[in-house]
Image (cartoon, rainbow, N blue to C red; front, side, top):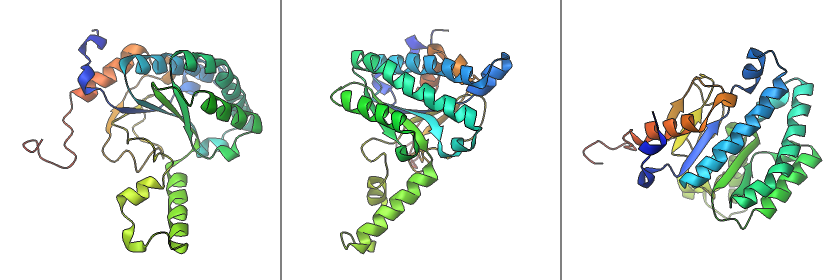
Length: 245
């Protein structure tokens, strides 16, 4: 079935978020080292990013490395960081060619200096691009983000820049790292796991969730189209009734 032909361009999700899960399991299934699964996962990132840009999706947020991932074996973390540095350097030209702007959310201060420097350089070089905004969540967790937001708001109250009574959803959203972007319309998670793993907990309040058994290195353009078609077949009510919609 050709899912791409079924996509209604006028009903595209504005913001798609993806939990890219299953790299290590894919490698283990094939008798390879886990890091080779991550390398194959990078190829899928490239393909899905290009497709999202061509379709006209405005934001694509990828959960690349969580704060909890720092607890993995040091050899795997070191390999991931090395892969991250090389990927960003090698893909900058492709991002420029496709008019993609790179953004990042998360605690970048925990990254090695070379990784942090390369990310910041790529963000600067692509800052004038006007197409897809590719948001990489690195050293990110929603609980970390929420705590940082609470601290920032508390400091604003302490400085008397805002009154406690003025704190509402808009104020809180403006204190998050995602304040410059719309909330995700669609969340995709690969590998068959049915959870959101501390990812964008505030922002996913009304997102449509799509889970697939496909491991991330096996996630194809057709699987991406399938998720979008599924999203477009849903009725998004945001607390209202069907009749009100």
